[in-house]
Length: 309
Length: 316
Image (tube, rainbow over all chains, first blue to last red; front, side, top):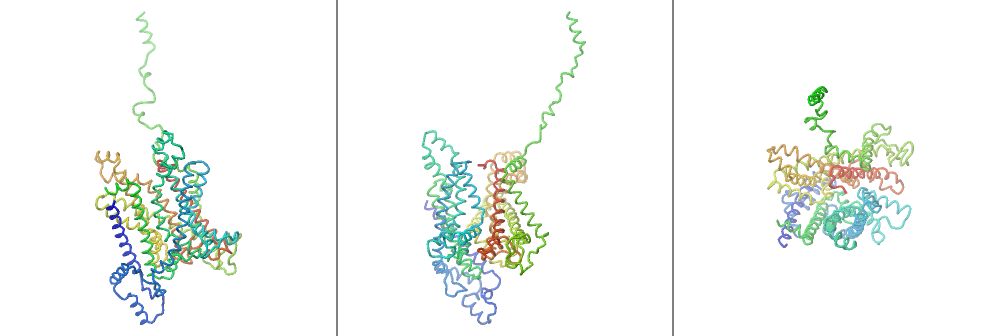
């Protein structure tokens, strides 16, 4: 087991390193230097001073080594647009907001989605199944920004129950969370339904039925446990998406989260922030996939054995 | 008496020809009574039995035809400003109303659909071709080549897709359709490559391929006759399900301001432009949003239908 985890961690580090290197050279391959693209008419001396200050006058490889050195000390660089603003501080300030919204949305989506999926599968081809499947289909195909716009319109014009923009009170949470949980909810419902149907056709369910196990016990102990396993893989990628998956929602609802900051950094062409945040997003993504792999290996011995061979 | 009987039988003149089996000989027994039902014919029939999928297909055809022909034949221009008729609600003159520069939204919505559908369909085609070639090569060579190629895929797909798209479109700066396509397909082929590889490996271990090998069929012929046709159905289904994702990706990019630039437009750009005045002019948002949702829904339903038709094992 220890060997398995160690292998996975090493692998994760390699992937992270590759991604950081790739993004670094990608960002630095943008034609022109960041200073010129921000301010057009700058006296040449001032421009050179700026370039010197940020180290852009040095060869790319030197910049790269410096960047990696900084990274190892936990420094993600600072904003070009707002001098003195550290990327690390940006993350510390804005990530909790994204985390709260994304976390609540995911929890609701997960719980309700799983429940609806089970209900649909157990009532296969009857009206609860049809209803859940139609809703799930709509949930996966209607883009979030459309859904957000509809909610905003409804709650501003017709029933002003909840604030439609901003951040601060519990009321501010309702609409963005509602928007964000639709997608996961729908896909969990679809996924869980097919997973439950898979398990229901297995021989061991038939055996349990033949032995006279009560139907509640069959569902709770045999079907639920086994069909739940594949959903763990899904929830790990969703957790990874909490921080990056909310770009649009945060922009629409004017929520001061990491996603909104990322989008405005892109529009400002604030490359160092884009680079830093990208590393953060990818890092959390890879990390949660690692955690997921390890968790799955602990829960399901079959995976562990397959990996070790 | 005896002689008589023999004679009478002979008089009846029995002809050996009368005792032949009529209409069926050994050759005709080998003939097919009716046309054989091939896999594709069967899939075709199953697909058209699925009413929802057929409706989705029809809807897609209508939407595609509209995006092609409406901008050509309409009397309104895509980019002509008409400042006297700004922000008009839908009317007989402007079916979908006009935007804040007085441009006719009916034409703009269909013209914008061109971008969305081109990106969806072309992107899916690119992803399919690249994924097939990559996955096919990995499966064919196997061993070290396979491992190296699959590791590369693993690294590429451990970066969130949306981030790659954003980074690529930031780096490439221009927002033309080819750039957008490149940004969205640059890592988008990875899942298809994985799928193709695993399918090919599975097929190459199956009995009929082993039988073909034993009979001395050349590897190339095995690939062409067995591997490719048998992975085809899985690829078609996977690719159909990619299209909504690509359309959403384009809408997302345009919504964030990284997509198509004016005067050109797309459904994503139109709905993001409508966002600011949503409370007063909701119709500006309504039509592009409706069309995005309808198109994505139709592709998903068609994908469902195709999966059920092409892979009856997966049917639930």
